[in-house]
Amino acid sequence: MSAFLEQFGGIGLAFLGAALAVGLCCVGSARGTGMTGEAAAGLLSTAPEHFSKCLILQVIPGTQGLYGLVIWFFALNVMGAFSGGIQPLTVTQGLTIAVSCLPMAIGGYRSAIYQGRVAAASITIAAKQPNDWSKGIILCVIVEFYAILSLLASILLLMNAL
Image (tube, rainbow, N blue to C red; front, side, top):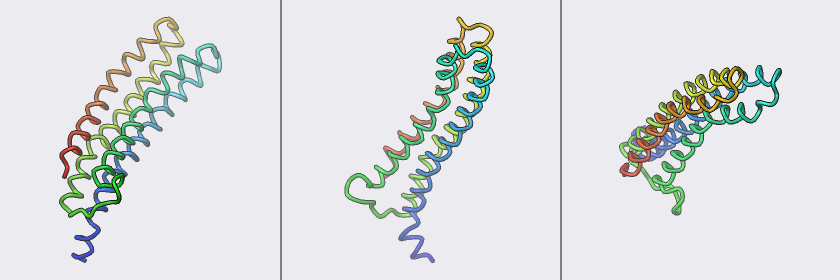
């Protein structure tokens, strides 16, 4: 068992970290965009002229899924996937890559959900004050800032992982 863990454990841990980054960020983005879409559907049933405003608000919580994909690519790049093949990794190296992906995995998941809640609430602005709907975008951008910090943390950790 120890030989198996030494041979494949590092690679497995690194893949796990990369998968968590993209997977959790995409799940969070799906929840956030879903919440916003549900709120938008209610408004659009009575005021279809607000479709573009609703669409913009719905897209915003989807950015975390893209950030997770960026970290997935970074992790695979560190592992050597784009330069001729995955290099063997020790358990310590694999764990280092996995932990480096966690800021984006956790921060992206949670911020996408919270951003979706803000975007869904901002649909009310579009409904009641159509000229002020962009204030909802500003509220969403404040949440986005923390997703960007998570992205930056994971990138900096991965750049120094091996």
